[in-house]
Length: 326
Image (spheres, one colour):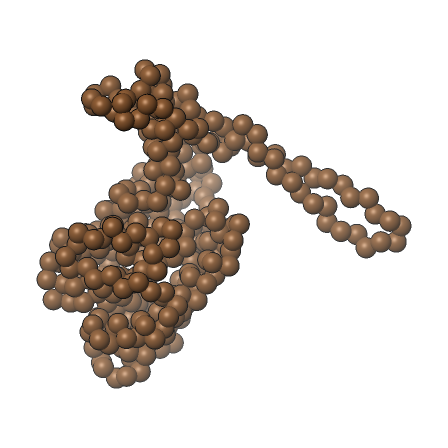
């Protein structure tokens, strides 16, 4: 019997992990710490009897210390993070606050309670990260390994890389028992509909465009969230403190293949399931048409405008405008 603290446990991957752990470890108590931002929902875990939700921020170090002490927590599984690349480009500050400062706050609390106060108890701080810290792969490149050089390319991946380094540093500097997993692209139940699969499924049902950037041939490794949870469990059970483990699905597919599969499955569902056409009348499939007609290609064109300079004026970088054309 153990007590776990799961941060971000009302979100997509964290919520699935709470269900997974409770099903396989019915005697354990899962304390969920979640600030219930746009991607977190208490209904995700409301039917899990072993789950106890505390609404709070991972940056609240004193709150985390209190939970660790009063609930006799021996394991932290840290999912809480801002995780959408486009959001990190439009507003990077939230990613710095949650992913870097939030992780540091958790590490400080864990160090205080598990190490500085001299409890001597066996413990584990498990950090959930992403393969995006490694950058991107070319068509002929080998898959990422745990020793691959970090090359983050967005504020999101840079913030996750920073948190990875903090976790490693707390192990080597203070002796905190930590493990880290870097996962590939997750999909599955409870996923917020800003990600490709739930977004395109909902758009297909409501007759909205399916926006495809570029040629749609960007390749991702797709990992079902339950397989991810299984990998985390294996790491908690058998992982060596201080080590990093990559978790992938082994299903490398271009976005277009996933989109085409969604379209064909929606078409099939409308043919086989009575009542779908009445429930979703705006879907092309409700009218006997192909869902694929909703595919819309978005072309990004960078246009550089020159700026006239007065003689002797300091030169300035010309502004760049991005145009999106369907």
